[in-house]
Length: 203
Image 1 (cartoon, one colour):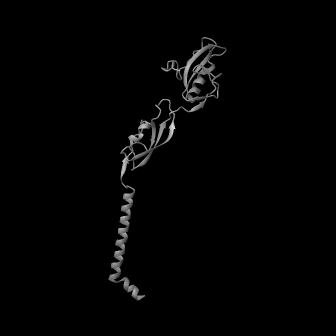
Image 2 (cartoon, rainbow, N blue to C red):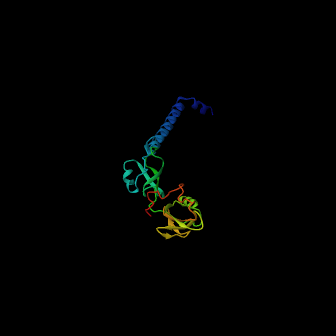
Image 3 (cartoon, one colour):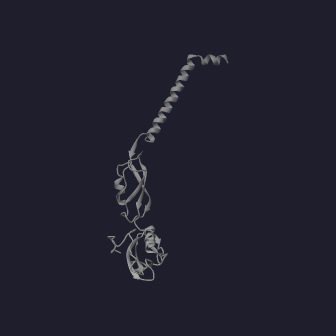
């Protein structure tokens, strides 16, 4: 036992101990350097702005940008041109690692199908609000003598009667026939699109 303690106090022990510490330090230093190089630690790229880009141009758009992309969802919006990027994750100008995938939301190429709501026997104002809620558009509003003021008598698309529950395209233009009992009723309230819409005559 005394020999062991004597060895711990010897110069030879301290030399070996120092060699072990230096070896451990070098191993960790080289490991950290390798991991840093392997993961591109500290090397970032700026995410480009994909918004407004057309789907067909995306591969060209990302050339030499060290970024990849993936379309994960399509959103139908009749106000937007079909086949363009609406939203992206991460956002433009974010700092990310090389070859990071940017997830894209694009406008749908085809309008989704929805069920035609029941507008007949409702008031014109209610019908207009329902049309907006369903993502549809107001077409012609025609007045017709009836036993009610402002009640919807028929609902049509391109001149054809559309039964409630019929599958139609979102964004379709719905024309209404509204009952008029006396001249005190004024049709086309200004809460939604009216005949002044520039597309009024384009069904």
